[in-house]
Image (cartoon, rainbow, N blue to C red; front, side, top):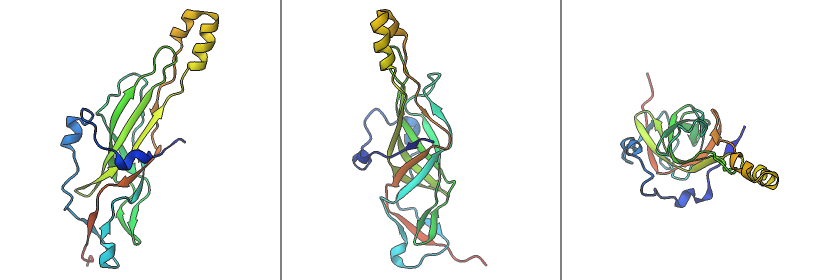
Length: 192
């Protein structure tokens, strides 16, 4: 299984004008003041989920450039793979839904051009709270450059018909990201 790793540039990443869609703007994370309720906490210092906390997600749907239907702006569905804990208390349970915006799609093409999918993490939903995430991930198909060079050597026009492969993010593929805001945790009263 492929692993998709967050780029180091993710911490400095800003939304590029033109890439944010109306769809992602309508689903923007909630105000940063809304707390997450947890069952218990050990101290006042442990009542905050800190920005920069790592989170492991997995693709909840398969995406591919094959068929040329995927477009920039699409909201991809992910889910939390490993629960996020603060001092032994689960704050974001495994299976919580998360979303990423597809920022770039390039379909495979002539002359060995491979497909490409690029995306940025948006948020994870915990109850009615949307917690902002940061991170980018992508996949590139395999280029057909070697085939193009070989084809051109024998029949110059044959390189035109050689294509690369489609890019794909398979169902269940691991994606690494980070919490992008400090989130207050509210200790819920014990159930009777």
